[in-house]
Length: 64
Image 1 (tube, rainbow, N blue to C red):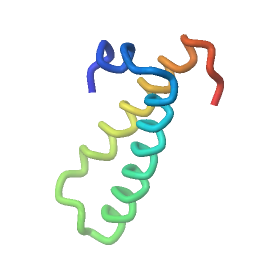
Image 2: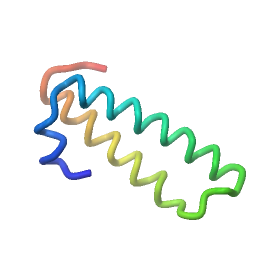
Image 3: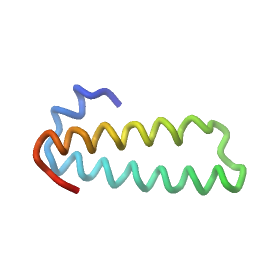
Image 4: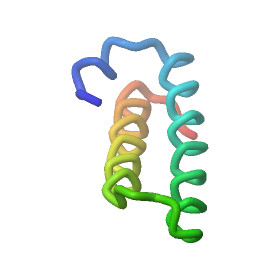
């Protein structure tokens, strides 16, 4: 996800995306543990996207 796209979203939308990404990360970790995940890069990309969303929320003054 691009940073400019995230910056244009409202706080509520960012929090919703953050929750969806955290849930997706959990599911990807479970699938990786059970050897069902084909592309392991999904985990690292999701972690980076979560960090981007958290950074934008902190810049907007929202603490989570």
